[in-house]
Length: 184
View (cartoon, rainbow, N blue to C red):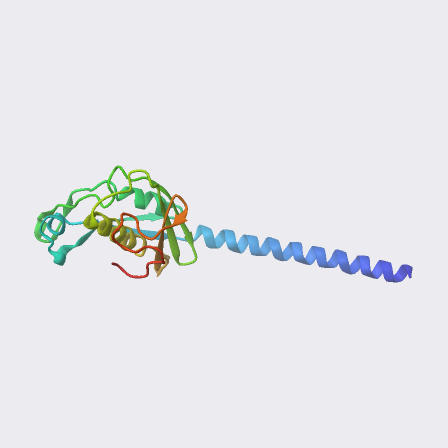
């Protein structure tokens, strides 16, 4: 019986040491993978031409790309859609763009789970016409789905929530109750 206990104890210790060694190797691999991760995202703004005349040829303009080693930067990228920079177009002309997100709208969070980004907005001051809602949804969708991880597509869909809850619509014009997988 004593030998049985010694063997069981020895096997248990061997198992613990083996698991600990594997865990350290896996943690090192995960850490190395995270250090070698590079995310890139492009910011899309509505063109003045589209907003003022409805010309859909230049509906959205890709303004800039941001890079980071952390996926958490997508929140900052979406917040950057509140500030419309001057953009140089083809043939050195300046293409004017509008902010994609009105200053009055608060972005609570942007979280990534799998290939889906969830954008949570505050209900306070979340109002506007159909054009405002289309620009808000489309600019955020185009921006987030441009995200790559080491050159591979990283985000393929977007879920919108308001104060943490899935809603039928953000401003009353477009259905956002389901995950959005293509531009509206």
